[in-house]
Length: 338
Image 1 (cartoon, rainbow, N blue to C red):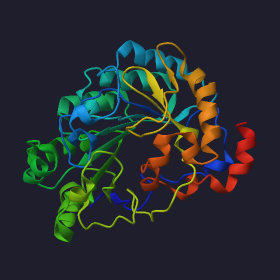
Image 2: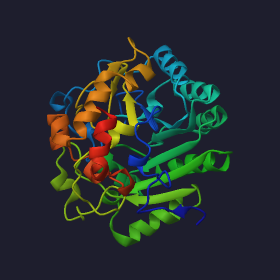
Image 3: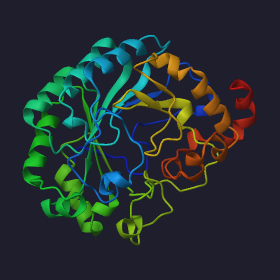
């Protein structure tokens, strides 16, 4: 196996202690949500919930290319480079017809150290792989849903020819140039240790890093009792011990731009607050604006103070890293965000 197993670690590598570098003039992560659509219906995802029972997600399904290029041009005004610009959001980014152009424009503008794409990779073809690699994609992150075509049908209701899927991923890896490839799978898509070994055998030679992550109860409306069954709920998505989180760190280092241009402060599917609109404001103005600043200050008094959504949110509890703990520094940070 060529790949390094990074199960139980932060996928992005070593993290610095967040409290030591706040406040940030430039966000560490800008998450781009390019399209509110998916070709899968995974049982642990919001797409398994009927649309009529979801809360507000976006006024637009697809982010216009001109809006995206406007945002990238504005990100060049940040005093430092963004650490990671990530295409993900709620859906499958490869469904966006302009995604390659988005990647290429971002790389050419040199506004981020890493340009990353999270995908189920079912739409990946040799032609699309060549285009993404040529555009300068830094990192391809592939989420697997099983080690067989039958498992894909069971987990996400999709017909996936696993042999062709693996061959397409192998093509990307063999032509990847400087692009790093990370392949991950959730534990609920594996049937015991034998199936886990099949994951490593099938994909261990077509990626740089790989991991088994944990399905965790983070989306309201999803029947996690049937999804998780008897799996360990004392571990985070990344295999670390679960603990209570007083202060959510996400608004302090990340922002997400939705297809309609609205900006939210975290990865929650139920937004605590809209921080601004990229149709009307610049990206740096939103990041440094009063709504974001006041929201961070409220968060430093505890998640329940920030919003009702934050008070009942489980996401950061199951995605927390020790380096992002802010509670011990809350009193000092409150003065900085006053």
